[in-house]
Image (cartoon, rainbow, N blue to C red; front, side):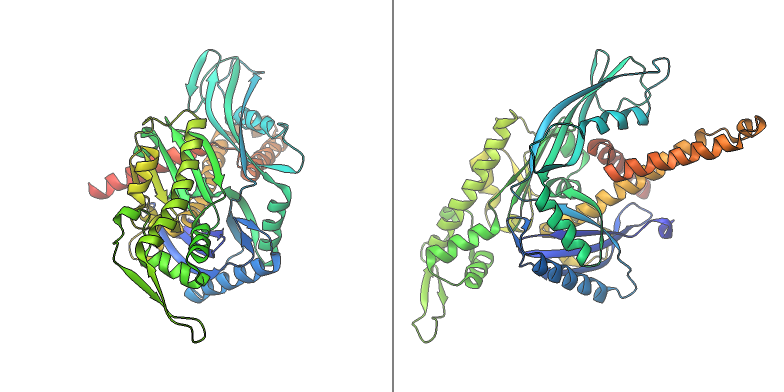
Length: 457
């Protein structure tokens, strides 16, 4: 069975690093990492590809490192994360009146409903990246997670539409293409991170996933099993490094090193009499830097980021302890000391660090269990969602065909046409990623829990 599973590759084009991870699910539904490579990123600012040539070089370098870790690997198609402050989201409502009311609701009708949302008016220069159904209604029945199999005259749904700048999207696609790869799908980074660090209980309790990267802080808010809100905050780890560099008059590399080694998100927790010695430049005397001053600079910027998170939660009416699962911090920036305490203080919600290791099979490289790789591992899981959904759809459609009766009526041609239509339907579903994030997410998590139970029995 393991060999039947495809190898899926995630490509995380970040502001500070570019990571390529190839993985395949084992018989327990866990990800076995088959290849891993990373490289420093120079062409990306605040999550957006600005210098295409530099980005191509970095992608190729990460790819080479991935091949070095596993020379037998063959990488063509990749799932790519997208972020940047050009990302916007909006809520829409869609309804269709059904043609065949005597039959149950089918996937085709849901696809039609979602497809219609791609015609939503958005500002010129923007492009729809994804359409995610939140909850459905059938006639007067509301809050239906999946209406397939229901009967009714009218189906409707609320949708979360994610849009991005056309040029920014084009730059990502060009960089990937010129590095010799094909973009299988563009996935919003906070959604990828969420799938890597969130479990079924989190989804039910309601959580905010805060992914603090190098150039952007990505936010995804889930409530009552539904994706309620997404946002990209244009401040993150690199801003903190620049603040340290400017505030303390040191080099950027020194600022980054101090942040990682001695940094704290709470000035009160820093020792008042501790100092860091920085060697002087070109014969100048060494600098003594107070650990407390360093913490003050980090706390100021981190508090600002958390204020943005609180602002977005207020936008959707989910502050004031309504999210029982609290805040899950992930991404490279989440590894700062005392960040959990600061987050709880600023937002008033419980917080914890989200690690992607619950989806990883044993024996993986230790580094990959760090929050830094949540997005990349989430991209592979997203690829598996697509693969498993398409396979289920094909199996379902294939079983529905009554080949013998069609042949009895000399309908061999009819059967062939039907099969072609199914292939087109599958292709359309694959391309547009028209299945709801929540539906697929729930199915995968339930499968994982079943497999875990089977293992323990």
